[in-house]
Image: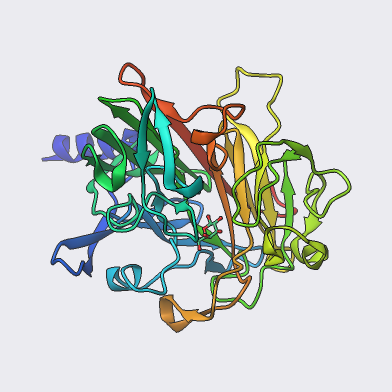
Length: 376
Ligand code: GAL
């Protein structure tokens, strides 16, 4: 007996694996599919919850400078909220092609395709009924010596939402055990050439979801250029400097400082694609894309990626809907910082291509790194 106890003690001391994520019911979709919510936790006080509908980030509890944690992303208390009219892509995986496709038209290899126009004259975020945010993905929770994760998989059949090819997609959320760092990693393969541009659509308010505004947050974007767009947010094809415009976030700036000076994109606020500066050092797996800071709470978010662009959207269409715990999500009370290829890339020959071919694997990932200002 003594020997067994000694052995167990040794095993416990060398085992560094985190426990598997907790699983709980999150309700059923309208068509009766049960959806589960997975809780990832680490030693540094960060808790993230993800669910299978839309491979969605539902909660993100982050400590501030007084040690107090707040849930910093918008969302709903159960799957029903995500299916409601008031949901605006909160926290979901967005695709097959996030952002816009002009007039819902594109062609590949001389063949024309039409996808739904669900944003004025344009296609937005992968379509209407079966875009990647609206389907229930297969989920597998796991843990290892570095932390906890959930792997979501979904195969979008040929022709779904008008896109060609059977697209096998995977999204993995992974929370590091000993650092407040979450990676969101994407993979996809296809059996026909098809456009793919995946992102996560989390809405952040580092003061806590439901706080009045995000205009007091300080933003830095590692972007000297942006893609000017028409008033339906379709890029003109030009790439222009941000210098001298309210889009210059190359140095930290308060989001509210110049928002009223915007004269483009119908002037509702920020809703622009920024061209991320490519680093000289290509050996690094990630480049810095954005840093968001809320001074009062000290919470800071750094976003890293190898994607060429980031859509900075200042929550202009939030309309006071009541989300998690009855909190109100007012106009401009959260920001999305969506790492991605540029909007309408499929129709813009001078933008990096988003066409995935059958012999290729789409692979990209984004890191969300949380910290407290003034602390390491
Ligand atoms: C953003 C987009 C906005 C708006 C929002 C969803 O990604 O840039 O214009 O459509 O999603 O409400």
